Image (cartoon, rainbow, N blue to C red):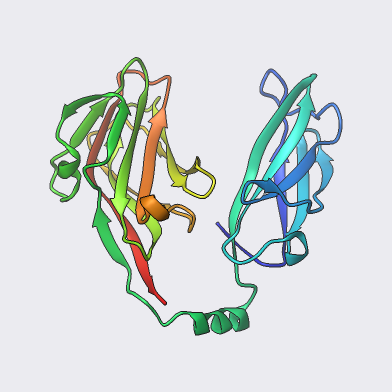
Length: 261
């Protein structure tokens, strides 16, 4: 998600008790707006709307140190039934405030290449799971030939790695395939090389069917490596508590642009 510099956001969020029902927090929750993983000090105003429903209002502004291409995230801290909780309720990447800023920024860029697609490399890794058939090479063509991975002890954890070049900026990944079983799903993450952590970009929900589905997951600017890892993009599929799950990947590729300065 993108957010304009100096934009004010309103985020509505719930709090729930031990039974899963909506319940007010023991005290008014507090919010912290992080800039690239560090508390920005920005003011976050939290108010109660109704039982178990709150809203947080904040501004992503230069006065709190935000600049174009910074990552921003809102974490809500609440105590519910004496249990302390912390949950990220919003994430975004800061973009220019208006079209005049965008045009001005183009003076620093000689040319932006057209969007390009690239398939996964052999450095793609299955951390947890059993490969039933195929290899990462099976995911290049859309041809019904699968890289099939089965859960190991109820868990699948694997990532695809792509190479977009030293000047490449990832935009999204497009996935064609499925995970069988309506009770199973996989969380989809992109690796933030700046914060050295995985950030969720979507979910792949299981279905009791043999037909593939197509999903596009947007990636953030920070999800490309630099230095010794320049050009590396990693997208992870992971979850636990799976029941005889089979993960079928027919095709996956990363879309990116190359910036020439």
